[in-house]
Length: 345
Ligand code: EAX
Image 1: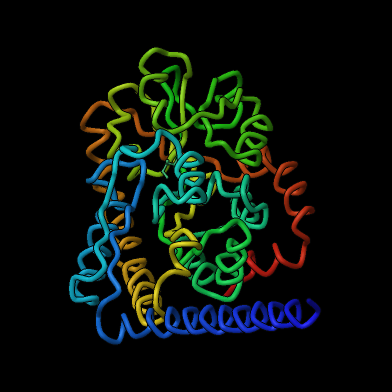
Image 2: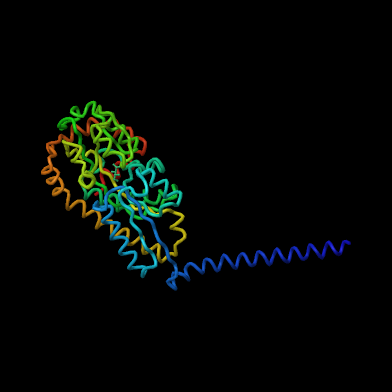
């Protein structure tokens, strides 16, 4: 009887070792497989890229360029399918959740709602943090920018590059706004972002956080009086149809970002990751330039379409109205980190 039991145990052990050996072999072949697949040009993928803005907006012009180059550089193995106009979700927070759930693969949108997933990026929401586009490029394409992108992996986001939304301006349907006091009592739609809401509260307005996909209707139905966005968004969304006044407040810079879901990213061979990374960086310059080169022309067209454009903005007055929020948020991130951005040369 004893010998039978020993015999059976020995056999189970042998099967166990055999099983383990098979498993290791399988894993190895899979690893070898994926880079083999790339070597042999076998790795294939269709990536769903989603954004909220219309196809004519710089996000999607950039996305179309990105898709074209990725397709070319992967010899058609990797296809990026672009879904603009909120086809896959009404708000950027919703798209980011879909990215985490893996129902979309790539997000192009503002960083506004991302601080809800990873507080670190909230440092960029500080009003009047950036002086101009050259300052923006210096910081976002520099070590601080890279650190902020890398940090997003904690939220399962593989952020490849900073694209651009732009400096945000105020529109409203009630009255001309030049000074902060003129905005008192206005119901202003903001992104789902605590710092932006606090900034408008500090001015004496009533911030109303809302998904972008709901804003046009809410403005039309006068549920809200105004909203704030960069010119390229205001123009492409035809906000002039619901808003009479445009104040060039430029009260905060709004970065955008191209993010791949981390799970999807990790399923790709290194060569393809490198190509996507390089392409996202390249297109970032192209996409930023698109918005910057057309801004003045779009302001002129919005004016031709009937908007009253207020250029004579007292930025000092707006900054001091928002200063309590600037101090409070800067305090959260630490003077050193904020100064590093403010003084970036
Ligand atoms: O990213 O929600 C917003 O106001 C954003 O600026 C817009 O969705 C573009």
